[in-house]
Image 1 (cartoon, rainbow, N blue to C red):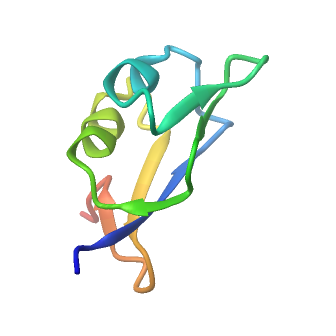
Image 2: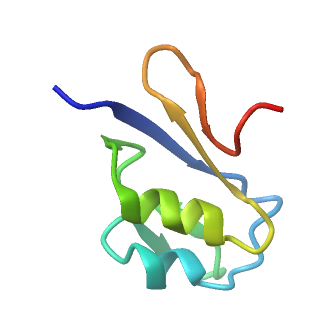
Length: 77
């Protein structure tokens, strides 16, 4: 069984660049205010979701391991 992730978008940081929807269109959507939301806050580990988090220009997307809360992105320093 693979890892499961919790995906969260900090709406106070999101600028609506839509990079996430381009990199992982099935995992993110923009609302009418041009704010990103994960389509499924709990999801199987997925390279496209990770690419979207890494590609967010303001690092508004946080990905953690479901259960432990260990950071996947951004990494703990």
